[in-house]
Length: 74
Image 1: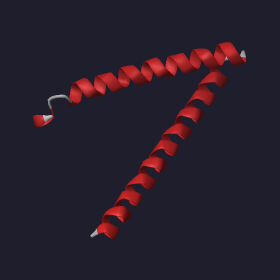
Image 2: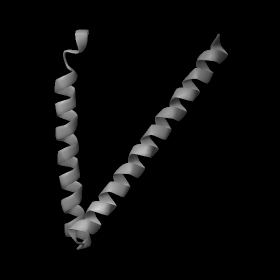
Image 3: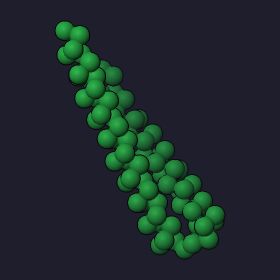
Protein backbone atom coordinates (compact mmCIF):
# COMPACT_ATOMS: atom_id res chain seq x y z
CA UNK A 1 0.00 0.00 0.00
CA UNK A 2 1.21 3.52 -0.63
CA UNK A 3 3.36 4.97 2.15
CA UNK A 4 2.93 1.80 4.26
CA UNK A 5 -0.56 2.74 5.41
CA UNK A 6 -1.57 -0.86 6.02
CA UNK A 7 1.52 -1.94 7.94
CA UNK A 8 0.07 -1.52 11.42
CA UNK A 9 -3.20 -3.23 10.47
CA UNK A 10 -1.25 -6.10 8.92
CA UNK A 11 0.93 -6.56 11.99
CA UNK A 12 -2.11 -6.51 14.29
CA UNK A 13 -3.89 -9.09 12.09
CA UNK A 14 -0.83 -11.38 12.06
CA UNK A 15 -0.38 -11.16 15.84
CA UNK A 16 -4.06 -11.88 16.43
CA UNK A 17 -4.04 -14.85 14.04
CA UNK A 18 -0.89 -16.31 15.59
CA UNK A 19 -2.28 -15.84 19.09
CA UNK A 20 -5.51 -17.62 18.19
CA UNK A 21 -3.63 -20.43 16.42
CA UNK A 22 -1.25 -20.90 19.34
CA UNK A 23 -3.99 -21.14 21.95
CA UNK A 24 -6.04 -23.53 19.78
CA UNK A 25 -3.08 -25.85 19.23
CA UNK A 26 -2.00 -25.58 22.84
CA UNK A 27 -5.45 -26.52 24.16
CA UNK A 28 -5.80 -29.33 21.60
CA UNK A 29 -2.45 -30.81 22.59
CA UNK A 30 -3.34 -30.72 26.27
CA UNK A 31 -6.81 -32.19 25.73
CA UNK A 32 -6.14 -34.89 23.14
CA UNK A 33 -2.76 -36.04 24.41
CA UNK A 34 -3.59 -35.58 28.07
CA UNK A 35 -0.33 -33.77 28.79
CA UNK A 36 0.58 -30.89 31.02
CA UNK A 37 1.12 -27.24 30.22
CA UNK A 38 4.92 -27.36 29.95
CA UNK A 39 4.97 -30.37 27.65
CA UNK A 40 2.23 -28.94 25.42
CA UNK A 41 4.17 -25.68 25.17
CA UNK A 42 7.38 -27.46 24.17
CA UNK A 43 5.59 -29.57 21.56
CA UNK A 44 3.79 -26.52 20.15
CA UNK A 45 6.97 -24.44 19.90
CA UNK A 46 8.88 -27.32 18.26
CA UNK A 47 6.11 -28.03 15.75
CA UNK A 48 5.66 -24.35 14.94
CA UNK A 49 9.38 -23.83 14.36
CA UNK A 50 9.58 -26.96 12.20
CA UNK A 51 6.61 -25.83 10.10
CA UNK A 52 8.09 -22.34 9.74
CA UNK A 53 11.45 -23.69 8.57
CA UNK A 54 9.75 -26.12 6.16
CA UNK A 55 7.62 -23.33 4.65
CA UNK A 56 10.70 -21.12 4.28
CA UNK A 57 12.63 -23.90 2.53
CA UNK A 58 9.76 -24.58 0.13
CA UNK A 59 9.54 -20.85 -0.67
CA UNK A 60 13.31 -20.77 -1.22
CA UNK A 61 13.18 -23.75 -3.58
CA UNK A 62 10.33 -22.14 -5.54
CA UNK A 63 12.33 -18.91 -5.79
CA UNK A 64 15.39 -20.71 -7.15
CA UNK A 65 13.26 -22.71 -9.58
CA UNK A 66 11.58 -19.57 -10.91
CA UNK A 67 14.98 -17.96 -11.43
CA UNK A 68 16.12 -21.04 -13.40
CA UNK A 69 12.97 -21.02 -15.52
CA UNK A 70 13.32 -17.29 -16.20
CA UNK A 71 16.98 -17.60 -17.19
CA UNK A 72 16.36 -20.57 -19.50
CA UNK A 73 13.66 -18.75 -21.48
CA UNK A 74 15.89 -15.73 -22.19
